[in-house]
Image 1: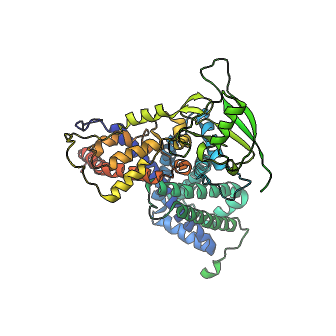
Image 2: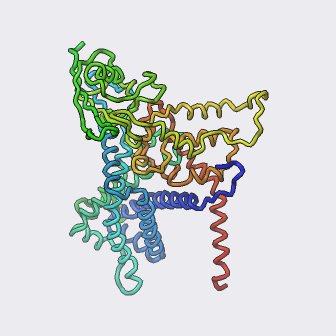
Length: 250
Length: 261
């Protein structure tokens, strides 16, 4: 690198900056969408009427159709760009997993002193990354299936006299056979998105004013809140719980 | 005071120079003394149990960075690690990534030299040097930030703890990014953002980092490595943002005539 030479080619590096923006940006957009998604599906807490009113409205106003297309594209784009960073070779993956496992384990199980003296905070984040990859892979399969299902639901009414997304069919599905896959998907989404947002904040220094510990507490709060909300919604969809706010629309 | 423990050391042994040896783990036992550090324990083993054991030490006070090794799976400085903080069985391995000299001794020097040459870790200036001129002044705040980066002792713990450095040879590593930031901050260094961009904004540089955060958690000098990396990311994005926007609008203009009006 010469001071005088300012004409260095920056094409490759520009590309890698772009990849980083696309992968982080799509992840951020998807995580934010999933919060919105929780409130959309959450209308089931107001009973079937609440759910059908919102779902029908979003379809009639042609908001649902472009949204699902955009989300499907973002989902695939994020999968392609984020997976760039997964080591290709099994040998490399094993090395990374061993390192992450070692750093997570309590290396300093001291029998004599209460607190380790050697600057060894417990380190979880490498291990969480491995689980982000794993949950990402699960979501790639289950999420694609879910997106295809919903795309069909949203688009078929445009070609005939069929209902789009509605509470009765959604509840029947969950009750019959989608309970388990949706529960797994919910857990994966909340984990992956929560940790992803935390990592994004630390990577770009969004939380510069907050400490990392504070960001981690926020992450945990987000994770448990949305997981809890998701579980309640899923139980209502499965009709294991009555919709708690249904009386408001009666 | 409880009775003295018998410590079991499981130490990685391998001499690459000797074709007859194979990598293996050797066990040593010794009685724990008060205030025993790994530095003292390893010297005891070499003096009394096996004189062929290879390991590096120089300052024994966490300044030289020679004694970094993997202790129970975690990269640490052996000189400031007390056995009192460890369980009875202590597993010692050499740092990964770096070239193995023998047993627990690795060549961090060559790696750091390669990294320094790659990022050209020296002040780049076309100003003529005047030895009689007074030194240029610098804001206190800036000087302190630069000094914070300079506290790196090149022990290699961050590199050994980084999942990316472990799997990518060309990644400059957390210490490399720290070094880059140090010269980017320095007003005497005349390198422009565009020049930095090629080495920093790539998978070899800051965008190779996937945010595992282990570097800061294992750094024995507690350097603010994550802040440094975030600074580099933002700097790269901002230095390129006008270009990126220009490219998008240029592309739009190119495609404009093709769309029927």
